Length: 160
Image (cartoon, rainbow, N blue to C red; front, side, top):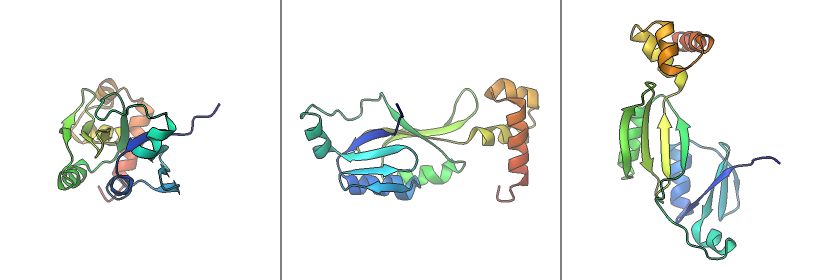
């Protein structure tokens, strides 16, 4: 058996497509009209069509039992875009116990979206804050090798 993707149900597929494609920068791989698949391994399905497929069972919004997780190192920019879309935040940028900065919000249909900075970026940021590699290992649970690779990657990236 092969896992293919997660599917979330949305009321307005065009509006949701805009959010995922233009704000969250996801690429559409397949568009069947009522069902749109993204390269990241998830799909949107139009609510009224999906509801018929499952025998008209109730579809609940904001059940808080599932989220889609994305990564991006420019959380401030994304947070502003989400504010501009008037989406409901679960929380704005906050730091997790392992020092990763994340935001969580509801998409238009109450599905939880989390965006976190890459863990490699966390390691580099902690390094720039004068943490030792041993401290970064303890805080992030990343391997020493992964941390050293991240430091090299971000140090050599002139856009940071």
